[in-house]
Image (cartoon, rainbow over all chains, first blue to last red; front, side):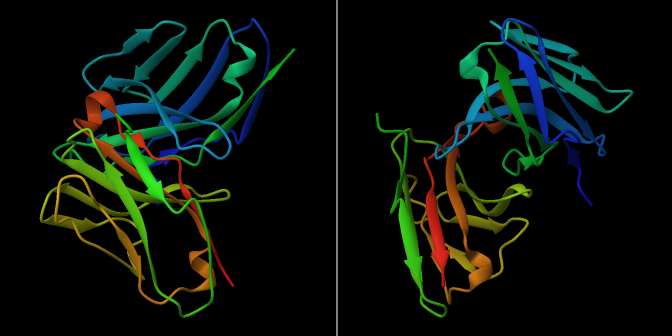
Length: 113
Length: 113
């Protein structure tokens, strides 16, 4: 049973526009949610996280929104740039388990010129 | 500061052979993990450690062993390689996984023939 779900395998967005990546989760007992970015032949890179007690966290062009009632989070990238083309993984950290991060299957983002 | 170093980068094994994937970090992180990435499956946790001398199983531990004799090193051993273990393996470490996420190595691409 997948606890962290990214239902869109891929997404194409025009350069300069907003990219919105979505993630749903099934377990209410997550402490933190995280987003990672991955280029081919490289390891994932941590982008941004949000605590379960907050509903928004912002870092430069990246903003993560958490809707606990809907068990949904999203990553907004504004404005989208060519270097943002990558696979994005949503991940969640269970409460009292500060080690066992659970990842979604990823969404491939294509930024179109 | 090299971060997380994985060796080798590529490896081809014959079915039944054993080998050790090396992982070292120089950031004095207590938390370390091994993940495998397969097409359409995202990142799946194999084994993890919350400090020297402490290890535990993740989602897909069968066929793999780990040990953590020092803070810096977290080797992953394949006991008897099988074609199903063909994958890309990532080692990661963290000071605080929720707040700062894990720092990943660049991966080891393993093919079992």
